[in-house]
Image 1 (cartoon, rainbow, N blue to C red):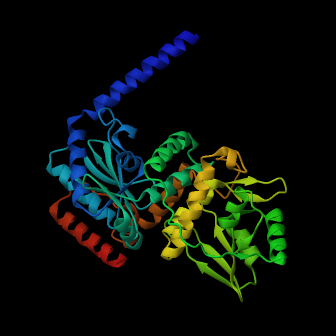
Image 2: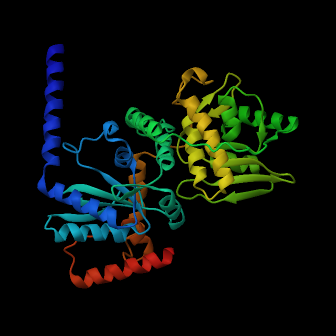
Image 3: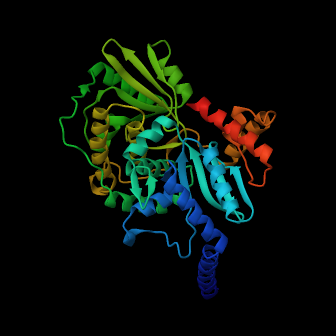
Length: 411
């Protein structure tokens, strides 16, 4: 039986490789990829994801073999509907059959299909964040990519969510290591800001909260715990669910920063000497370690995901440089188990609710049911835009006008 199993696995792998090579050699798909790549070189879009990491590496380190794999281009756009429509029209004009644009699983992403094969995923990004990434971004062979730090944020995000798609962890970690080797994090050695020590009374209160509430220590104090340091500084940053945040901040002077595409809602507790506590609301199930005395400390992937996201939240350049220097130290800990307080890099304990695929589809179906009552509305076009190049000229003209109106409203 064992011999049969090994033989079947070998034959299956060989056959899968042949099928992948056959698909990659499909003339319609090859032509489609050439058209998509030409579009990427001539339009303001930013590639991200696995193909971006692959293409930014030296050729010897690349993990995709495009002789037997079809490139999967994911890219950001300020106007994803317009760009998806343009790609579809170009594919249609080239004589490629069965061209469609459909909304993806994630709201704000639109998939372009050619001959029933996905050739591009176009995702919306706010103009402010897009412009910053464009100015900082990398260009290879005429195609623009998001920065290595933004790619790092995405990889640490995956590694920080033990109730997400953990089947990708090994692949994601290997890619991240290749990215870090090629583009090491750069810390400009300057005078770091002096962090105010937490008073004994506040420290006592913080430790009491951490031991008695479902709350995770985040930020610089979490880094100190990972480094084996005992000093506490202010402000203290926490990660908690909404109900816990409301309970702990009730009756206090607070300032709330709304959530955006990369950062969750943040509630700051203010006192006469400034911000003393920051509470970030959970967006998924974020991993943590628990110390012997019952304190939950954000895992290194959770800490780094928040640091890299915070860098792109509009903070000043001095703060960005400080974060880069701290993140560099944390990444050194991440890759040297003997230096870490917690030997396990990716713990499975986590705080928050992780939305699975079924949950996302349920919410999306519910939203579609509500918005489809008016398919010309801004909300419907924003979330459920679809297009087929065979649309008659009158409908196509109307659709283009609607998309122009949608673009103006976002500016």
